[in-house]
Picture 1 (cartoon, rainbow, N blue to C red):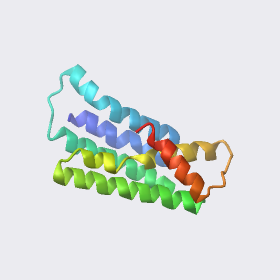
Picture 2: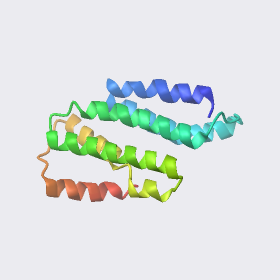
Picture 3: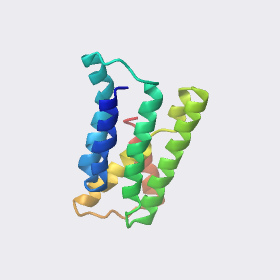
Picture 4: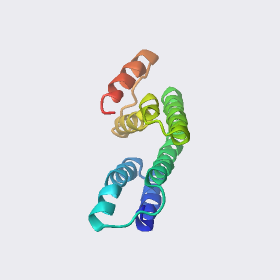
Length: 145
């Protein structure tokens, strides 16, 4: 991975701490285009792209998790942080074993739940969340994955 791409993926996601929706959108966009930019510009890779990409993903996931610690709804906060920990475990196991199916078993649902909850909260609605509703939301949030 190119050092400029790495710097961009380290610097721009910091905006998540101040502007979670915009910063998160930028982080996701950078994650989705970095490979294409590298290919388009013919930039030779530096290091193991997959490993660097996963570490940079965990970096911006961690910033989202920091924001989630500020949520007043304890149920949602704990669920988001638990799903973050689950994804972290999945990424570590994937890097150790190099078995791609592990990522499927430890999906990145926390990111979708974070953005859904933050968006709903930012329009002034604080949903009453029960565990059955959370279960339904999690199933629905698995669909994009």
